[in-house]
Length: 451
Ligand code: G2I
Image 1 (cartoon, rainbow, N blue to C red):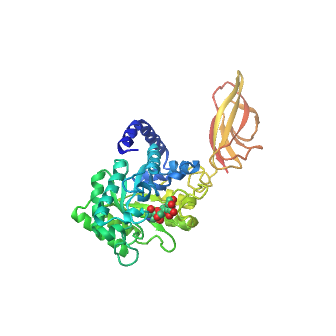
Image 2: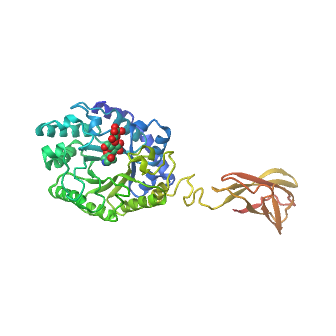
Image 3: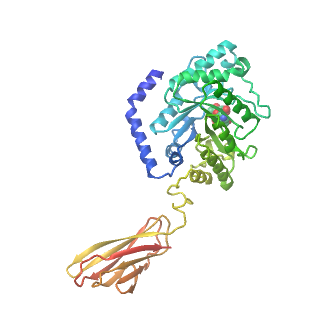
């Protein structure tokens, strides 16, 4: 689809997008019970990497749509996917993700424009002057196609070497254009889509170390010289060899203090259970502690499609079940948990038995009536219940069924006969016949208690 056509078709579907956004807003107003809505309550986005090839899988898409407020195409916007031969752009897979995100009111992160990896071989074979032109054409081609539709772009990815030196990584761009290629890329990007936040993105820069110091010095230099840069992405791929650094928050903060936003862009943490959950909590807490940490993205929806699937590094398992890490993230974001998720306070499985009771008159005649009290279990199963019913002073009960009453004046306390055990949300009822004796008033049903 051409750039113009893409924008025209977006205008034509604007009503649809607006309706989806309204749905999303209504959903988030209900309760902060998803990652996206809880993060929104903290003024942040919560995103995930998405692969276009999985969007046809119902559970994948349902989980994506329910939980996340931002998406990053995992591979579909990379150079090999979008410009496999010079000047020929293909956006089919990336468009699929962007269109899906927009239909759900989600934001999109652009990943990535200039990177040494997933680079078609033709780029590496160009001479310096041609390479410079090709780099700018590539930036203009992608950013033009998605102009106004991407909240943040990873303009340059992973340009620094690992290890202690803090040196630049060898790549066609570095080797032929020199250090200045990063600055040229950012200047080109600013002109191509002035509304997009322009990010530098890297890994093993999450704590204070030689590599993050090198990035820090570059950002500081850019800010002092007016080179356009708005954000730094911290990929945050963690495992036992590369644990969540103890100075993570401090590192995010020092970058923020340079006057850029910081974003956690590719978060995943190998492990399981409470240890993994605790590590995720550290990451979320670090971001929330830094005002300019504007959002977090996990690098995939489900463990089964993770680039590190054997390390089960994500928030949903291979069956899309929420892991302890999910609960930890939701809780750290101030969310309240969602129905059906054992272990969340106030939710099913929180261990508190409860019930409610409501009264209706089911039959009525001159001298008497039949009353019915319906007992409904709360979000836990219950094994017994107790309800008090206070009758008007003149009235008297002649019979009662499906319950066992004890009397104290005109107050009857009713317990189950055979019907104490109720599943979560299930109901039972007892009935009684009362003589009016001159009072037609309704009895009062007191609090229902359960265990
Ligand atoms: O390596 C993890 C991430 C590190 N930071 C930059 C990210 O862009 C990078 O993502 C990963 C994707 O998650 C993988 O899905 O980048 C890898 C490539 O560098 C992606 O893997 C590739 C496979 O290597 C290819 O064989 C495959 O054709 O994914 C391609 C598309 O499925």
